[in-house]
Image 1 (spheres, rainbow, N blue to C red):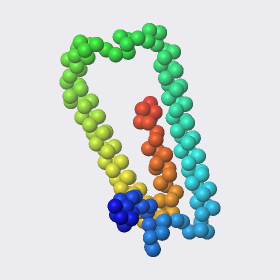
Image 2: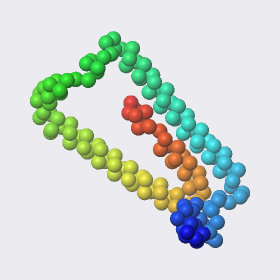
Image 3: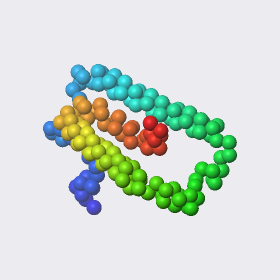
Image 4: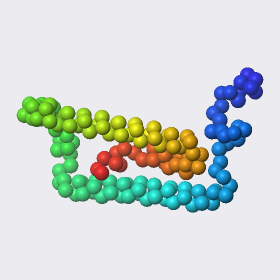
Length: 149
């Protein structure tokens, strides 16, 4: 494989005019470094707050339950079937449509916000330089840590 073919298969960083990597203006760099540090510290504080509150909720749930066995945590198949038969009309006509509406509206809001943030980051190298690390860090937060919110 020639060197020209090798460079075409490697991933290149985002480039601006002249093929140089996108960098903020040198005069703004100290301000942006402080801004990035503050944003990352806030994200870290939120992650720690979510983790500690999740541990607190888990502790409260465990301490409130005396008999913590598989049989007391999960219902049997017959209990699930009985609950379905008892509440079938309310589930089909009230709860399932409401849950579907909340899911689809949340997806629409996330889609619009995601496209807007991506557009802003594409047009502004400074915002891309500040927001990209925050977005990468936010992807490492497990969804299960946000359930109790």
